[in-house]
Image (cartoon, rainbow, N blue to C red; front, side, top):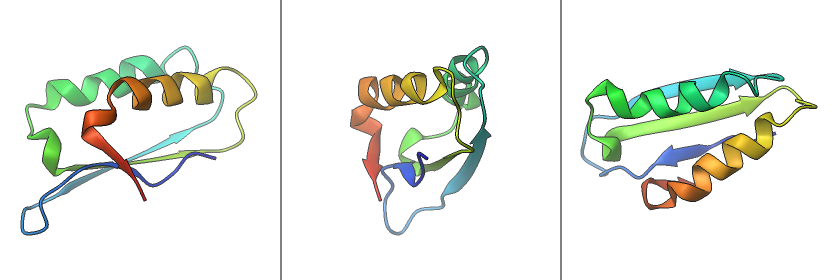
Amino acid sequence: MINNYMYKKEEDSTCVSIVLTTYNDEDTISAVLNSIYTLGLDLNNIELIIVDGGSTDKTLSIVKDFLSSNAMYFKRN
């Protein structure tokens, strides 16, 4: 299970939380994750929580690759 990844945020700023639940979503998860960039929000103020229900496909690998390639925005809690 992947959870509690979030964009780094300022302590005194407003934060938008996005919760994604996944289960064998390898066909759609990349588009969902990339759509976060199109929200027009300050990425530093977005908390991203990803919860996987035990996927047996490549969902977790895709999520980990996304988080790794965007590590400058993420910290793990």
